[in-house]
Length: 488
Ligand code: ADP
Image 1 (cartoon, protein in one colour):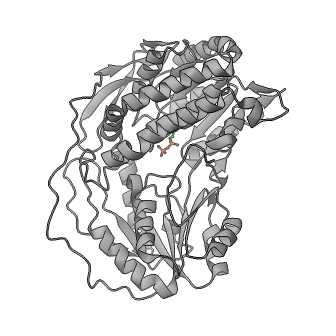
Image 2 (tube, protein in one colour; image 1 turned 180 degrees about the vertical axis):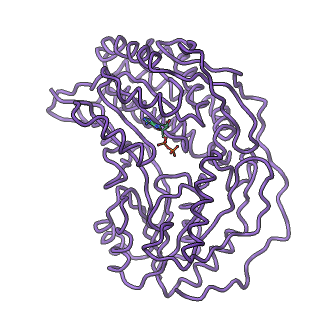
Image 3 (tube, protein in one colour; image 1 turned 60 degrees about the horizontal axis):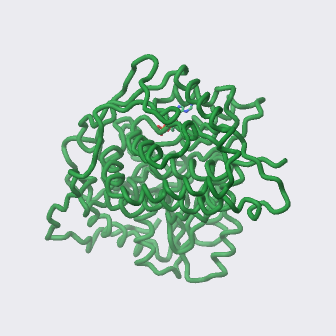
């Protein structure tokens, strides 16, 4: 590893004034019920849990906890609705989905603020990325609803039936959109469960769905934690499970479904390799590294959490990266200047801090910019580790936080071998001026998504998914329809 110099680290002597997004335009209820068969209904056992703001620990709302009896009700509603919904023409289904997309757009500001309040991500990201992309997914799949014959030429396309969809806390509304839109476009009905730390935008979406006039029972949104998720997975009248979350839970789900004829797609963890060649545009690459690992506090399954820099430019890249980290603003998610918001939960912060400790114990050299973290809430400074090798746990295991492990390389073959040496296979990034190098690497890297001279770019038309322990099945694009259809 090259010697790293701390000289010339840029320390701004000026600051930004506060620029908080207003919260006076949002409506959050004190208590949320389950959205079943087009109505908000109380849970059978009258049990509720709190959804809190990770930036200050304040309770935002109480949310119903669905038991297996509630899951039964939701599945029953979805099954009943399936008959009519699947018989509707694609054109008619498309109208409803377009309407949902437009309603999300109309309420985009409200969705964005609630997303940041409930999950801790910077308002800039919820406003400019999560919410527009969620609307985009509905628009995109609405367009497919009456064109399935073109998506699958010469085949008779049928919906799968009732889909159980379980989503994580890192992109709550966006993940709901990724799952709902293709399922609806292809004529399926749905029982969807958001994660327990971020249920509020999915519940807001339930209001939008009600307003859209979607027939009762086509989408049911029920809240709860792992037990509720397990009750969905194990329900005998569900035809398909779509899960995005941790590899541990994904493995459990795969075991639970073994021997059944339920369809399954899993989008699990990752340990993305972000590779910087000496011929890359260095300043752009540094921005790319920051975006790859610090976007959404690193709570991103495809995060570029392993950085590989060609040895000849390592000193330069790392110096510039440290400088850039010094100017990142960590703090209030609702402040429009914030780059890094709050860690989603105390549990996740504990996991991240444990990995930072492990990194140090294993001999890694840590760098964190000097930033004042707020006293209340869950916070972690952007962190990088040098002097690590392939065998270090922070290089092998998913941390799901703003922690980057940096290694160097000399040759293309060496970096391909290192990049592929992981149990995961979700994402990678390549930074180089040479198109031929990009094509060579995209063939050799064992990753579902390979970005070239960019990172963490998402688009409704583009398939996303993994290999190996990152799961199977694709979401987005034409490929995303496949998971929700069967052929006669
Ligand atoms: P994390 O460990 O990062 O919280 P999880 O994989 O546990 O991620 O969570 C992703 C989603 O899976 C959440 O909606 C969560 O409630 C759900 N979940 C957790 N455990 C189970 C389970 N045993 N069966 C089904 N869903 C589960």
